[in-house]
Amino acid sequence: SLKMITGDNRRVAASVARQVGLSEQHLLTGADLRQLSDEALTQRVSSTDVFAEVDPNQKERIILACQKAGHVVGYMGDGINDATALHAADVGISVEQAVDVAKQAADIVLLKSDLGVLADGVRAGRRTFANTMKYVFMATSANFGNMFSMAGASVMLPFLPLLPKQILLLNLLTDLPEMTIAQDSVDEEMAMRPQRWNIGFIRRFMLVFGSLSSAFDFLMFGVLLLVFHAEAGAFRTAWFVESVVSATLVVLVVRTRRPLIRSLPSKLLVIATTMTVAIAVALPWAPWAKVLGFEPVRPSLAAVVALIVTCYVVSAEFVKARFYRALSKPAR
Figure 1 (cartoon, rainbow, N blue to C red):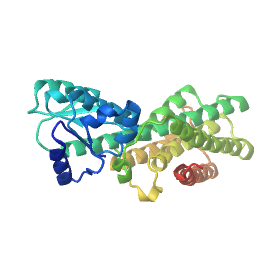
Figure 2: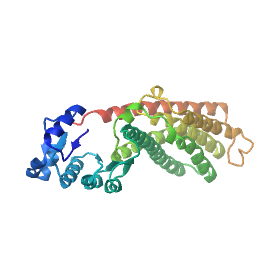
Figure 3: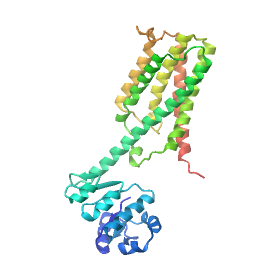
Figure 4: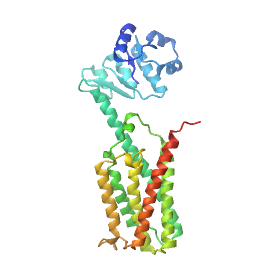
């Protein structure tokens, strides 16, 4: 929301407010502020768009009240009287023609008279934050799931589920698509509203999708041991391919809250995903496969791996829809 804070006369402030579309219905003056306690001001500040006849200390007090009310505050000013408010705001904004004190107190100085720069900056910041959160979701859920899968396999098997060099290669390959997330496209609704760091939400996401990943890993273990009676080489090869391909494809699912087919990833992410899947699938037949501990797998086993990966991606899409639907329901 936009608010105007000025030291000018209340009538002048009200006139300007009408011209720019702000409500003057609940205008507060400096005299009014002196009658309000900090708690009362915090309650009034959200419903007030115009503050007039205020002194520099009152400007700062208004900023602090907005922050106490739960708002992230940006303040724009160019005079000496704005210095304390600029310093108190989460983001202080000034202009090139402002006095030196104001520019020094500001976090951002606009070099041209165009407020569109601020809007562009906000949208760019929201896209950057959205892509950062995509990486956090992917990394935490994948690592959480892998931890349980590796621990469980180590207990059940008489051999190492993956060799150290295979684990390093797995991490390298699955990181390739995630490295392109910084340039990924962002759904418009994610750029239209501010997002905040929510460790509780990240934890829930990690538990849900990490558990889903681990469940399909254990399904893979059961198929390999009980159906195909796989030895160490075949087990490692099949699980490696399944792990890389599933972790790579699920990036396309969890990168958006929309259904997969309604949110197009960036070309760079598509290229990285395709390359990673192709490398993982081709590795067992590569000339250097034995050096890495891989061996060609039977066509029937390859088909089962493809089926499990497909079921995992479809399940992740279904779980994602339920997860965000439950999140959007109002708490009772």
